[in-house]
Length: 144
Image (tube, rainbow, N blue to C red):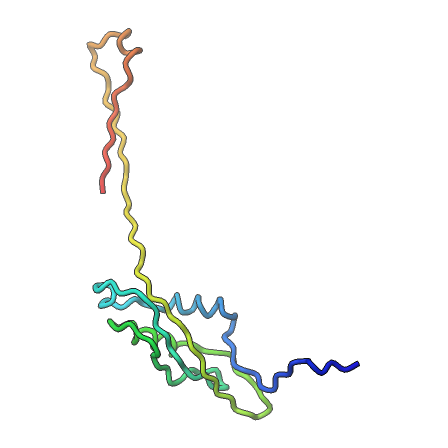
């Protein structure tokens, strides 16, 4: 019996090599937070729309929703670096439009601190009996 509900794909569309996980990793590796956005402490998302040709090249990126402070220009720069897989469609040239959300979040600030332990020796004139009953003196210094 013939299955009439089988989905057919007539055109192959360009895909990113490695899938969506590799796509996100590429953006994270190449994205540089703009200095003006760091100074203004700007966070948010930039939505970029772009065209993908059958050769895998990205062209005509445009910002649909921006943040300003240099984030829009950085998102366009990263999208220009993308390269998709080439597709063959029996001589038919395909141009696809896609949207991507690029998140800008401030780097987390980490505070490193060290704890120094200093042991003060007992005084020489202290009796042995008193030494056993009293706890040893100690001191902690926390430096930032």
